[in-house]
Every structure is written in C-alpha cells, then in structure tokens.
Image 1 (cartoon, rainbow, N blue to C red):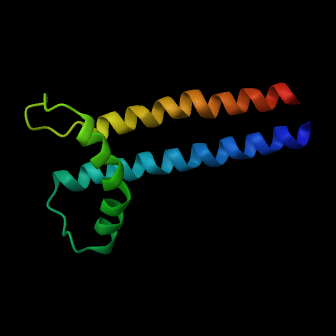
Image 2: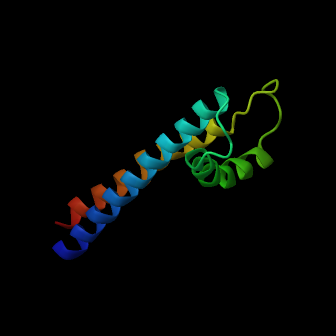
Length: 99
C-alpha cells in the first residue's frame, strides 16, 4: 500500500505546484491588464494564451453585475484555492491513511 500512498503524494504535490503556478500566472495577467503592456511581447502573449481560455469560459457564465469590472480572475482564483484546499488536501489525507 505504500506504493499507492507515494503515488498519491506525488500526484498531490504536482497538482499543488501546477495550481500554484497557474495562480501566479493569473496574477501576472491581472497586472498586465492594469498596465499598458505590449501585446506582441512573447511573454505577454504566453500569459494571455494560457489564461484566456479559462477566463473566457468563466466570463460566459458570469452575469454582468460588476459595473464594467472583469470578475473572472477572482472567480478563477477562488476556484483554484478551493481545489487546493479540497482536492490536494484530500489526496494527502488519503495517502497518509494508506501508509
């Protein structure tokens, strides 16, 4: 059973890192939207291409109640925090219960 436990711990760590990295990329996207960054910059395009598909799907489902403010980064960041606290922690707890 320790092999499955180690696999679950590794999966939880990788998922935690990916969610943490995506959260920072999302924060960078918000900062880029506040400043007038060059849209042809490769870093800006990379960040835009990585975050826009998720933000666009959230924008389609959000009502326009914010008076022109884009609330989709807040919703996505809350979803990331929920996944980190629920799914990643559940994987850790399950792995330690199997040991």
